[in-house]
Length: 254
Image (tube, rainbow, N blue to C red; front, side, top):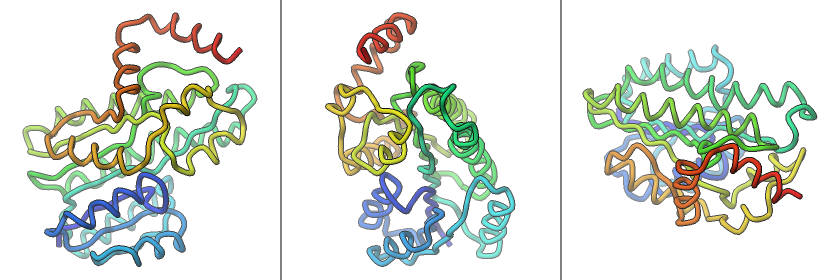
């Protein structure tokens, strides 16, 4: 049985991946949708033409990932695509953030992503794909977004290295690095701080991010960066000293 697994599938970019892929991936037997909200997953499943398996689970819990792996073995499933979209960010000064919530970003954005990826690679074959949701925040350290940006920098670095390691096996990894996306992400992120208003002028729709990510994955590209402003930001982050950019960000915050 050929399957696609999507984490963070209940909303935002994860949900959009399921909707777009449902129309084109006709050789897939089942979509396996992972998130904590069973109701939202059921709602999404009702919109898909593919058979779906709903897995309401917390991927930061190792025992739950063990059950996922057991289910793959039981169903003799081949993982054709793993799309890791689960994650969250919190804005605001690090010293003023709730410690457990800050550590939770690391557990979900880094540890859980690494854990599930390591567990599922053995069930992939030549031609399989991995898509990891990073962020343009990965391009440089960011004040009042310190932990989140650091976690996404990890995802980007990990994905690039993993892609090279797996290339000979015919498994290809793409890190998706969007800027601000019009999703519920900011409902959580801004509960402890606010983003630079200039960032919101670069906001794009999930459809754009996902369409480009799928195209870049198909072409075996290691990165997918949506929109000209964010592509320009990527170049700037490579060329300009990060210390200078951090000072500029501080001035913009006033």
